[in-house]
Length: 159
Image 1 (cartoon, rainbow, N blue to C red):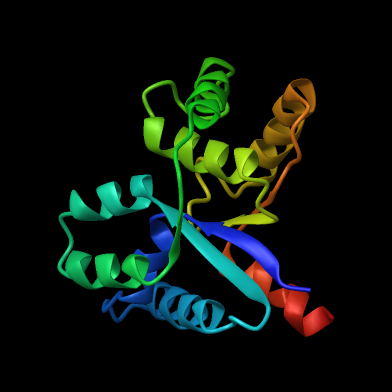
Image 2 (tube, rainbow, N blue to C red; image 1 turned 90 degrees about the horizontal axis):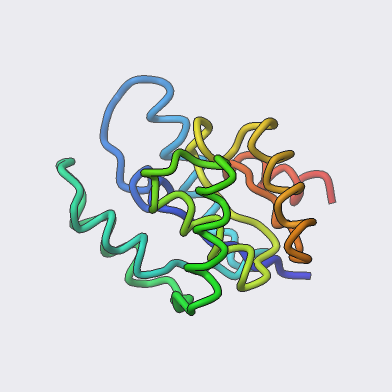
């Protein structure tokens, strides 16, 4: 069964990354393998991803926008804005971090199976995952997996 995966801004960014350090090379190659796994995943982005990429000040931001342009779009409906506000009010993400709260809310409201991200600080860490589960439980919403591409790819290898 194909999993529905919302990807945040870090995914198209790392897909076009050119830095030569080992961490960047690992994330680039893993992200590319992940995005190529279309037999297992249906990918989605939003205008939030495109806006963040367009504001980017990194050398390959146009290429990253090109990656995002090939992926289906999820709309930012009023419920997304409401849920994102709840996430910020409850300190799931910092109150000023509208982007990350919207990424989470889009994945939750649109019932994605997963949110793919390389953002360990505000999204893909165990403490944030537990906090998200508590808030979604209070709201009566399903909790997507929030994970980096390598964790999501492990599901393919383990299947």
